[in-house]
Image (cartoon, rainbow, N blue to C red; front, side, top):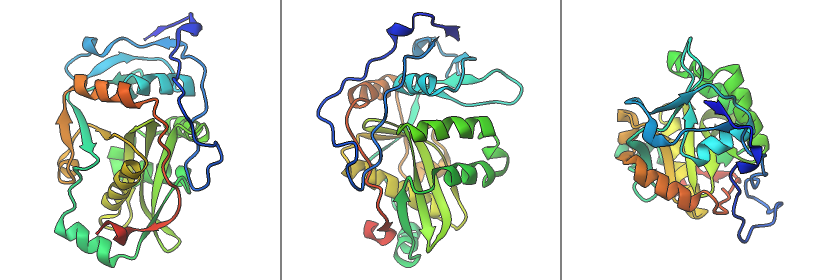
Length: 258
């Protein structure tokens, strides 16, 4: 990754009509960040794994610039920090989420509730520790970087509660109408699925366009994830990344999804 010394060439956010910054019951509006000091290559130069480049840093300015371009970091052991823009891209259309019969039973019987941004650091910690080797890429450095993004209103979490016990959740980065899910976890069966269902519903209600899951897996496909050509994903992102979409944060019972 090349360092861009011309820091005045960074992206400018187009601001339209905005909700009041202290709108009750809504997630915080993202605060402006300075232009990135790094210049990311375009996605057409990626390798077969979708790697755009390596290096750079995890400052808020770098991360916001990367996500605006459809690029995300994914640390790998013993190599400089790689940045990815995969083709195809794993996505969940907000009206295409699949709720199986077994998940319907969980929603009906569990008695759980959800919130947004009530326990961001705890959700990140749960994602880092709750998945064995699969969660080890969420290092303390990575967790701290997303915590800083959260403080600036760019990263959000959704929590699943059994009473006052955190049983699952998901966190990610939101660019206007596109939410990029970074990781999710569960301490009770189906709790991560419930988190995804609830996040999609809140994003849809807020006027969002797409839930980005980066790469599809069998688990995500069972919930409705599909592969979208990178070019189409980037078109949607460009059209939606400056929309004023704010997630509702209040506690809600999960059986409302039935």
